Length: 174
Length: 121
Image (tube, rainbow over all chains, first blue to last red; front, side, top):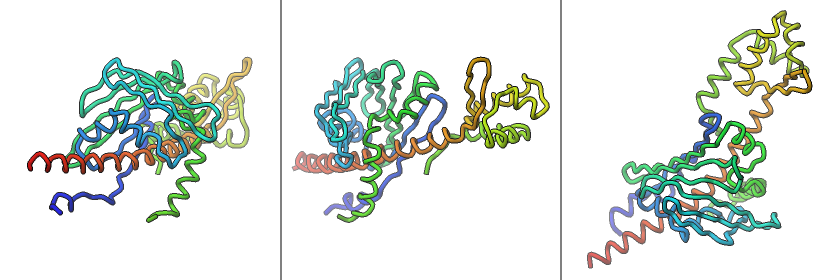
């Protein structure tokens, strides 16, 4: 075993924060224990994206995950969930793809009220700070997203997520 | 914990710094009221009351609804609580996702290290 391996904080859990930064903006932050190029890779390769975007723990599974990650390229994620008869679809277009540092895409499934998402990857030593920024076209659009619970596209599963989190809490160390 | 941005807190505190506005909130806690009702109760001009309600509305503490010619005011606190609850659930969603992403990152790191060793050999 080499020395590098020992320094890997395998059990350290980083905090996820969410803040409504203004009337139109929502910001999610999280630090990852790895270099920016690796974290960026996990956001831009469909086969990797597929492994974390729809965690099994909330019962959602990918039907298909297409992402042509380059400026002007499109993406389309289709999920199924036992509670929903119809598959859930999310799609949009990549506006900017700057390797290892910045991704910008549109969220078009909700029509005109959809946000533009900007994700930045900032390497800090062995870690990478990811800041995900959703900018809505208006205050009303974000308010509607909040009231209808639609942002993130998993409104139907939120209740189940609550249950899952309780289950997870009781099954630590499994 | 839910985080509010400083600007939202500032707006709320600024709104609450005025005695009339605190009175208006207290009043609306008892019953919804029109701006005219409120102006009368606080011995104010309609314009003056409109301004106060505007500040409270900006801070999300009061919501107003125009029905016909009458603008009715009511407490917006429920909406704020609703928003806080939503933000917390949204955070949980991303937290679960990011836990999975941690695993992908760990695996890619290990793979990179193995590949690096192979190259050296």
